[in-house]
Image (cartoon, rainbow, N blue to C red; front, side, top):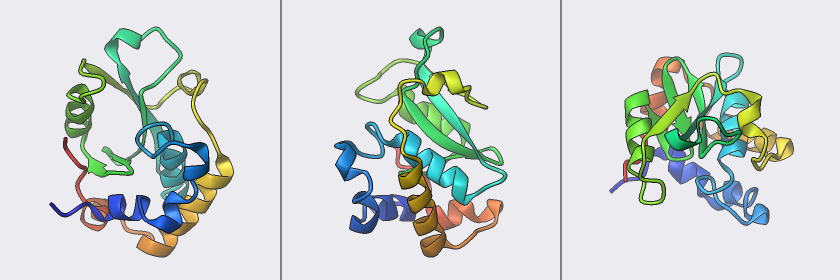
Length: 149
């Protein structure tokens, strides 16, 4: 299976080195950093969105952060529509329960999340170098469809 171009980029050594000191990956602790990087790169039209288990609706937490722009959602594994993103995370081996997608994501959901603005800015710079500034309607073609487990 060919990995989406964004996934290949996110897990390349020059990009991966920025999250490794935090002892996590883009899908298991570093998702907020990567989502903010994507939003900085695609500014001003992009904003962070979050997913959380339906059982956590009253909590100040999120299970995953993505970048939302023009009705699509992007994380380190590629580009999704809302249904595809919800399906992927609702059927995750780790979570395996219905998920809620919240957009815009309130700051209260980011209370207990790993943040590193410097790393987000550097990843945004690297995204610009690697992918330029694609039009919104070209993001799927340029970055690749999101991975489905």
